[in-house]
Image 1: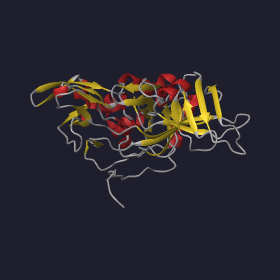
Image 2: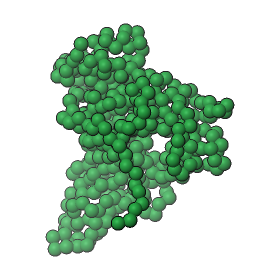
Image 3: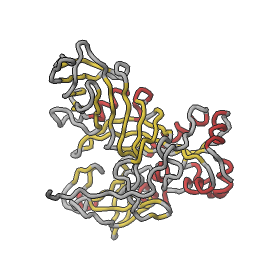
Image 4: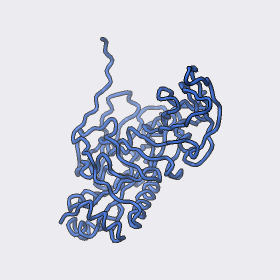
Length: 383
């Protein structure tokens, strides 16, 4: 049994497509098997909602009269990039306010714009014969600018590590607050709902795949940075952070409830985004991979008190991690997630609703993403 993208899209248009979330298909496949389930289900929706630091937005402000070539730019006091054309900029999610320390950054600017708030734009330039103005101080909203689109170089990590701390002092990390002497452990994944867990080798996900991005429609633009296929797999899924995606989408379509600026204590600014990817059930193999459950997905716990060379201490399933505690060498460690499972479910269900109502069609990728990829270290070296 096999289906095509065209056949599935025809069923979506006619309102006859059967859509289930990645959590829902687990029991269906256990009851009926992958072959029968693949006959019944046309699309599986996935979702995640967590911190994705490698994110940001391109914005075009339009020209003032007289015009200015912006080489220094601040949005609500946060530095944006001034090395593009006269009134284009890129603001990174982790960019800091000047002076820093207020818990506000580029991620919050992006959230404010999507929420429809006014943002203060301050810009400076050298002044030239064609761009005579040297400064401007005004307020903008998403409606005022020409283009504003999210472009995130690295999102949707395929699995991730579990963080703990064996030292005698509290650590503040991008994995949250790690208490001394292994009093807690944190993780960050939607597990069985996570998009790249359900298509671990990117058989249906590629350049041009249409996705749910922050409450709007987006696309896979390329493989993400730090794209890595070299780690061991268990049950067909890597046990460490592996593949990633670069994604793009129009901010003017987005919903602020799926975008949150974060201030991670002792670490810095990040952006939490809700992202979902529909998986077309082209055959039983696709269905089988989508039926993976939290008790079949493993992650490795490492000691974040080590400055480098962090080795695996032990592997745990996401079912164990979600139970609230894990065991390690006779001690009980409390666990908590940095990504929102309830948020991931909202994403997957919203995407499901769009597809069921014929509001979201599937895109066949125009280019496959790499089947192999490795991450190179940054070495200190001379000429």
